[in-house]
Length: 191
Image (cartoon, rainbow, N blue to C red; front, top):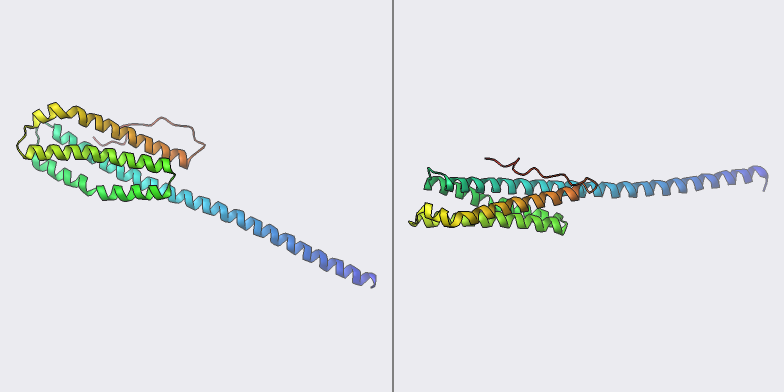
């Protein structure tokens, strides 16, 4: 074998080695890019699920608070209470779907907090629903408020606390490096 042939074989070997190294690098880069894309897609799905759930919980919370305000109002109107009660009941399904999506996306702590917030809202709306039934059945509204309002106000405070816990958990999952910011309670609440 002469030196020209040997040099040609070394050149071909070098080309093959360069191709193999380049292919390995490309495949490694593709794997890293794929993993990063999957992580981004998961974060996007979580963000969407958390956002939908928070929106549904806020809407139902505000409708329930408005219902309680109607009940406490000096110009109490049974028909208006029934209409608002219907609105609150119609929101139950959207809250259940949203909490279900959060349960799928996880993690467990956030899903648990979403469920607790939904249950707290359901407890308060159920209490007010019972009041509306009692008043429609002839019970004096003022007497009912005198004996039961403190419990509804406690329930309303529980709703706020559980909603704040849920949203804080969402922020912690979506932005783990962000320090805890104080919540701005009442800022999003419709009056």
